[in-house]
Amino acid sequence: MALTESLDLEPGTMPPAFALPDTDGSLVTLDQFKDNPILVVSFICNHCPFVKHIADPLAALARDYQKKGIAFVAISSNDVANYPEDSPEKMAEEKTLRGYTFPYLYDESQAVAKAYRAVCTPDIFVFVRNQGLAYHGQFDNSRPSQGKATGEDLSRALDSLLENPSTTLSMKPSVGCNIKWKD
Image 1 (cartoon, rainbow, N blue to C red):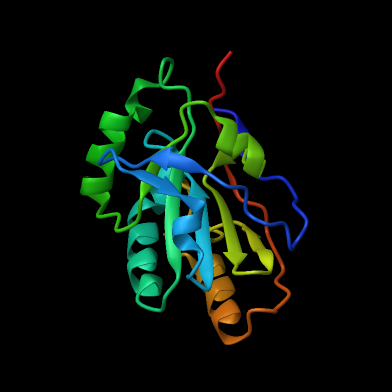
Image 2: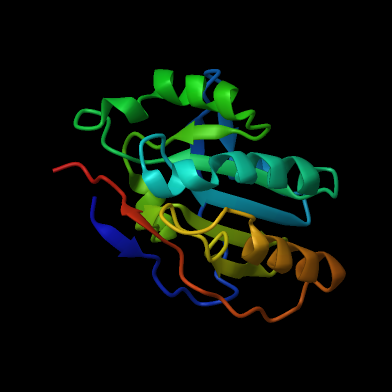
């Protein structure tokens, strides 16, 4: 595992388009979320200890904020030839196990991760409709070896954006495993 920190991105960056298969085989596109005021895009995977640490709290946080109209989508871009535990079949099992109520998409070509400049798992992006990137950072201060995952940073960002979509947010980079790029 190579510990990697998310890249610094310019606030206001618009989300790159995607059309990726969900674990149920349906195709999910960015355009499907155009009516949601806020979209959370998380690059995750099944095997990363940093993602495992936040998986259940992320599922719970998503359920709470989906009731407020916020859309969530997760994308796995790892090389499954070398990391078979991140395969689409295993992703479907993980989605059920964790109770994810959002699409969990497979980026086989890794083009979407590259377009978003995602580099680690988890790598979390929050976009406000018509305004672009409002938050790119950590779920919270906890790590697998310290503290319980609460989603405090992401929750604070979402609450601020719900109150005022033009809010300028401070961002702490996410830290996790590097995305497993194909050779």
